[in-house]
Image (cartoon, rainbow, N blue to C red; front, side, top):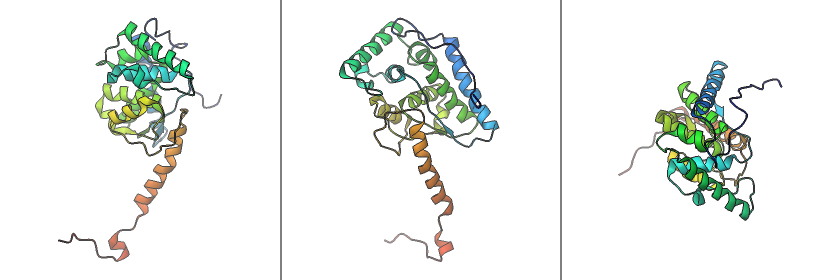
Amino acid sequence: MPGLLRRRVRCGTDDMSAGAAMSRDDCVRAICTGIELAGRAAAQGTSLLLLGEMGIGNTTTSAAVACALLGEAPERMAGRGAGLSTEGLTRKVQVIGRSLDVNRPDRSDPIDVMSKVGGLDIACLCGLCLGGAAYRIPVLLDGVITAVAALCAVRLSPAAGDALLASHESTEPAARLILAELGLQAPVHAGLHLGEGSGAAAALALLDTALAVYFSAHTFDRLGIEAYTEQS
């Protein structure tokens, strides 16, 4: 397909409830893939990176990574994703808890966390956040999956936080806590459950409007109005 870049690291991850999702080397390769894609975008003159993801079950891995990094319980971080039943949510919480018990990820080592209870998508998105910072391209996050990837990036390199912008606050319980940890406020609150870059695309119009106002606003001098002075 024209425009599709093939960057396969491996054919999916393993069952994290029975062991590590992937090897540390595979995780590093996925992160480096994201950094490489950011560099490619920079070479093409990209001025803003909009993140997005497509996957089934990746709110489960995202909640697991968030639990490990933030020291929270699965019951607090797991949500219904695209629409789990109450029974399905209970099973999701149990899987996350079992995965954390089996793998015991080191919260001080984001690569260890991603390789044990994360996914290739999270690792690659983490690399995109790192690459955006390295190539001085702002990175507009999407939902909870991209947010947890950004958290991994910041834990690896705190300077990466300067490149991050939030778009919307996902309905997933972990989203608010992750954005707070990143020090980001999302302008869009629309009860979005989706990823796929939908929230980032929605926030893009707001960023365009903000920039238009900032660069086209008149000053007091230009309008011939006496500048405001503080009155005692």
